[in-house]
Image (cartoon, rainbow, N blue to C red; front, side, top):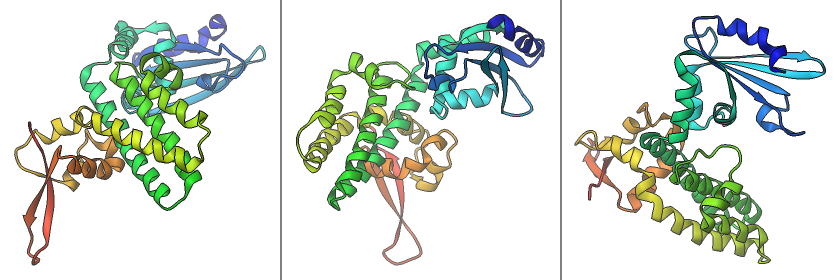
Length: 290
């Protein structure tokens, strides 16, 4: 198959802005990783015309897809888990062209998972977990038990992804088999939820208690990325300033829930600033150093 595709990827390899090319082959009958194509060609470029361009091919009864991706977009996908398959493609793909060891270095970076990138991903998943937990609680309290059950499964998924990141791995497509090997406590929560013979409302109630404990014990470490940014200046931040900060953009939609939770837990301090209105204050935020 590689020989049949050689003319296609060699044409790309000859272009000066192509940094590297990977091949990912379908290895089972149903393959979500390759969108059920027999092969994926991932071409990483610099300053390409379109940030993401896809072409489909057919040959000898087989199908191939070529994804031409700008390096900036690829790094955004990897850092924010926006397109999770991309991480699998880079980690498991076979290198067929590599300019100045660009892909080899990228694979090494993914393997080592530097601390600053790990803290960013933890904050991202933690923010989603807090919002999801809050929504589950609301649904439970209004007796929407089936919706609460559905939402708590999602909350556990975020917790599982957090557990994987904490151990220094990338949590992309397969989660629970990975968690079973590295964090049996989190895995047992999931097992308890789906295997329990208790009524759904009781299962959700018990899991909410377990989640609250899991979230509170992780709050400080999982908010390290946000706290580090907040500590860069002595003055308190308005929520608007935090929300538009470029390093927080990826979890801006869940930032409100996260900041409120951290304030309740005494990790962030809410500072009142007078306005022109009587007894009305601006609310600003400072990280509490301890």
